[in-house]
Image (cartoon, rainbow, N blue to C red; front, side, top):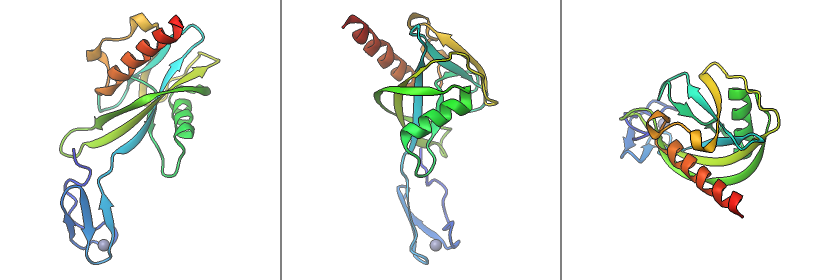
Length: 176
Ligand SMILES: [Zn+2]
């Protein structure tokens, strides 16, 4: 993965860039571009019965696989605002953030243009469990913790890890 792969000219002034793959600098206008990971927010949406909401992806990458509601943060957007915005856009649901589950690194797209993503996961509670799938979501379905899709049916690599963590911490929470 390499965000700056193939960058040859400055997007501001079109002068040739000095690009080592992690940092690109324009000697004409002084612009500097860094290959940072793209921040994403991801919602593990729970209903009152402890079920989890997953959406089957309607677009590439990983078309047809199960994913959690979420997406890329916008510039300057607070992660918790982005989390509830993505949830609203993809499912029509109004949610309330519950607890922060963790951070997982992943890759979006195919090499060599693939970008590294930094994925922040929260659990989110919804009062009204009647989601409406957006255009890029083929299907939305509630899953009990012991009925989650297998790893090969899940999108990306970190969704499975986040679901494992959700099941594990949920059991700890229940056993308290
Ligand atoms: Zn320039």
